[in-house]
Image (cartoon, rainbow, N blue to C red):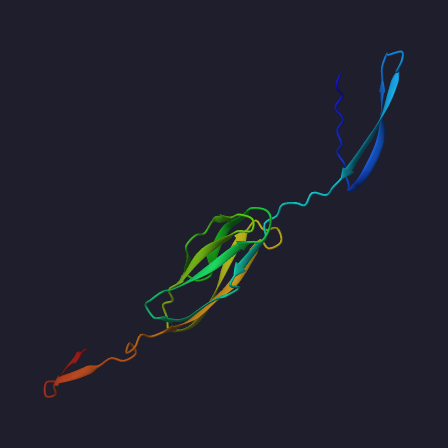
Length: 170
């Protein structure tokens, strides 16, 4: 007959014990069996998010145009990374995806597009939320400068007939 013995340690380290089997066998009314096992700690599987670069700098963007940059989302952990939300605190910033997964030791390119509507410098934030137990929210700064295209700051008026007072904008 077969007897199954299970070992379920509650902590790390070597354990030993004896099991006694009783029977109605007159020659061996009891049998003592030595048992041993080693408890090991199982490392929990966890994702770990890392973004590269740490901040996105667009440089100069011509007013009316867009700039694109790639933010690499890395998983340096040993569990599947689930990015559950990508959001910006500005409507001038859009991303290629809002929800995606990254395998352990893998990366995922996230395209970030800036379409600012006013001249001058801009700075906003992009936040990624994930199942990383230590960094469930990662926020980066997105910055740049919006410049006017050549000549867009100046209008030209031509006085076609100086006597009539008619002017035409070119």
